Length: 112
Length: 113
Image (cartoon, rainbow over all chains, first blue to last red; front, side, top):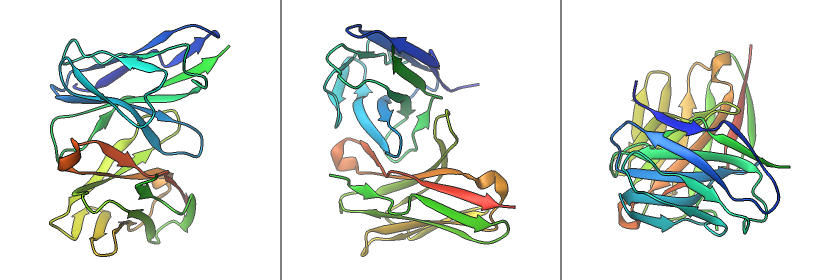
């Protein structure tokens, strides 16, 4: 079955630590996205990538970094510069323009 | 600045009746609109979409209506079922902006048996 796999499902971070959230897709999709969801809010775009080795900042990129070395993988690093990292993080992908995004099941990040 | 807005945070409907979820947008460049359904602790699931060349798209119990002049879209669910209880997000994108998707804040639908 094709899909998007996010891991881990739950992640805990200590103050000052960087953590990396994994996102892998086997849908052969070109574009991949990272969103953050906070209670009572919609999905806010952190970063997106339309092709390998290229990515663009979304609305809330500060304190985050990404890489796109392979078409299938788009890991997100939450750095210590992100002052309020506790949230539900969602990864998505899409084949091309005019197509719906497919989402993973998310990673919930909490601060210890 | 929120480019896609869902002004009703919640909606309750009796089973068998119609559910109408609304969404407004501000960017006239948007040409592709989607509705997603989301359960807690899961990713959103694509429900139905519509391109700006149409004003209606139907898929089973779900129909999306687009009013471009009012920059408004709505999702109709008929008949509503208890399993439809979830948070519904509308989203929009524009080819000119690199297919970045903009999401509303969601409407929590409760279908009462």
